[in-house]
Image (cartoon, rainbow, N blue to C red; front, side, top):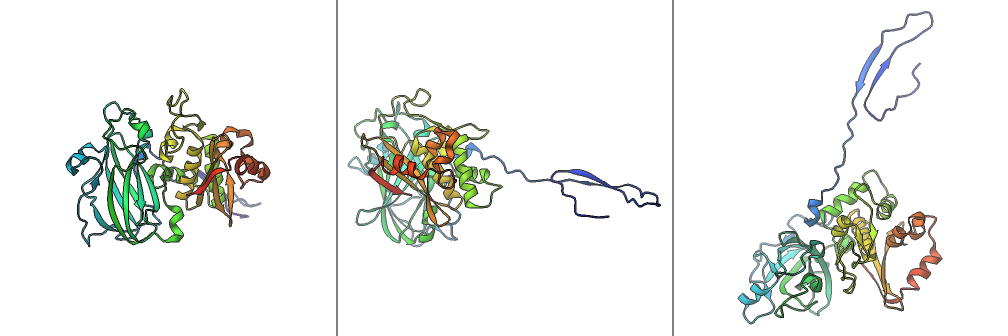
Length: 381
């Protein structure tokens, strides 16, 4: 007698026979079932330098507008003549970027960033920073774009407000990239070039939390593909957040993540004396898998944003001037606290450091984070 369907999870041959007392058994019926479950390919590190438009932000006709036509040449700081200033600039935008252009929501930026001969050229330290500044000199956005082995950068900047803005472009980590830079190069945190953008349609305010920000390049294809790869079998934000957090604790077949000072012999000796932030970005750290607290925090933020979650970075200094960074994740109607760095350093008790686990140590977390790192505190996307 038939009772219920037969469940199988892999290819199999099923045979059946009818049996009844007093009657000869039937002949055996046989059927082969082939189950092909598509495998999600592991992301390729070739995409570490590939940026895409955030899918939720992308619109038909977005980007630079053909009308009014873009005009003028990008302005380069430095020498008295623009010809010489551009020649001397370590960052040069491609010719399609003009001094004046109108955009909707976002703009593709590309060009080259070439260090001088003898400059430090490790690509994990090499990125270009674009800052969006309004007419009142308020910075309304900063975007980091990595530079590849051929000195090329190609990515997107986004606009959260309408209006006219000046875009300033900086080399990221001037003192690391160019330790022997000649005097004609601009100093750290001074722009290399500038151009103007009028934004006619901004990114909707309810989607701003999905955007890349300084050192959190969640538009990077490698980061996006890896986040989707890790969580391909999961359905809820809580499950996905836990998976990414545990990935930062334990790693995967490609290797573990390690907390290392930048001047560790296995990293780059002598660089801890430089500011600890702005060195790696998520796409870099995902490959390098060695870094400090902001690297763990920024990779968690980038992967969660890829999956549509709202996540901030929180940081501060202690009484000695030492800094630390961790995350706030908006989940189930409230902000959840978590620290992937400390979880990585304490793998046997990692659940103590994330509020989406019952084992989370709330009192200890406040004491060891908010109360300890209470100077120069900030919460930012």
